[in-house]
Length: 475
Image (cartoon, rainbow, N blue to C red; front, side):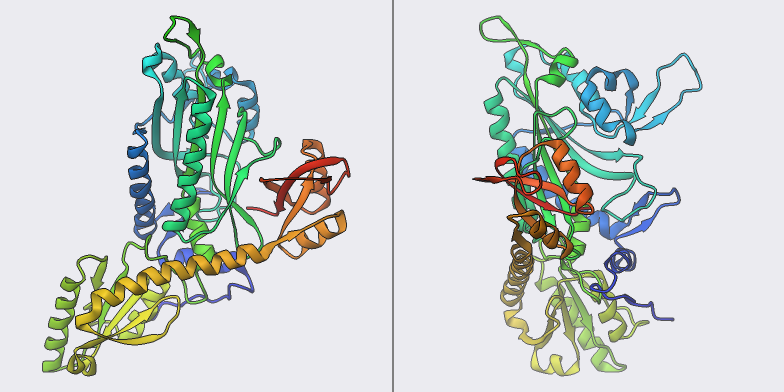
């Protein structure tokens, strides 16, 4: 059988092409037949299921219930919240009914409006609050013609939580905790270090009072928004006539929030950790953590090796382990295949290993061979998986930290952006000034406001400022 070619371009030479090849050749995804769409293949979807399972357990503890809402949204719903409608109008895909008397329908670009129409029927009393639901669904945003697998496409998968509370304090408290949970998910599963904080007024979600974000920084010098949490205030509640009777029988308007992560997290993981051999999956997110490859020869030894390989697989029940006992492929071909697929640990078992009652362990991120006694296998694998998860995070964290540069004036700012790094600078907060910064710097946008308040002058307009803001180019 003709061998499948590996990655044909180096990561540091042409990252977009390298990234596309890794996603395609590892079996994560493929391009869809409609321009701007993608197919998530079984490996990619298995990674998404790991994310879903992890976060479902988080939501269960927080008493957020999964539900499902319609994908078709009446045009009149968008018009109820003017700022929201304006913000999403360029991205909305519309469905025209054959019956011209029927209202035009949008395919959801986000679900605030359709969900809050339902909340207006469900919320009547303070006893109905807090109301917290989430849906895992697809989203359509007709903004791109070019598909960047997982990073930007016309259709993608996400979760969107929608909550209503009696007070803004409750809303803000849970929003902060949800953002922390997103950060934990990215660290514990994806080995992704993040910047975390509030978006500027210009970058705020359309219709929101406040937006907080988690941002990763990719090896090509671009930020990637990985999740957002929005304090929607009371605007949507007023627009959709959501109100309730409080304990004193007075009519009140609830405070609302929405928050979400998407399949973009898979793209961030691929881009951050993978190399010129293919995909590298952090052990916590890998659908298969260990692949056992028997080195087979003809004769009696083959049966003995296969028998021992099956015993080892059974021994590793506490891990996600698989055995590749196919005889039509050489061991070398299999090694390359599983390196491409990003399996964290490869175990090799040949005749000499059988005699020594050992296996050869190869870790995907290091590619070093270690001889491990079979009797110590569970203990050693547990250590290697944990160490790999930690090492991937620390490597990415070191890159993130080294990429942040303080810019005290406009020339320094331009130099940082030109060097594909993150500029930390004072900013006045004026949306118009932010437009100028993006235009004059060749595309650098604000990523988030830090918690630190430092008196100074805006890096561009020189107006007094106490906001320290991260700027960079982005996806």
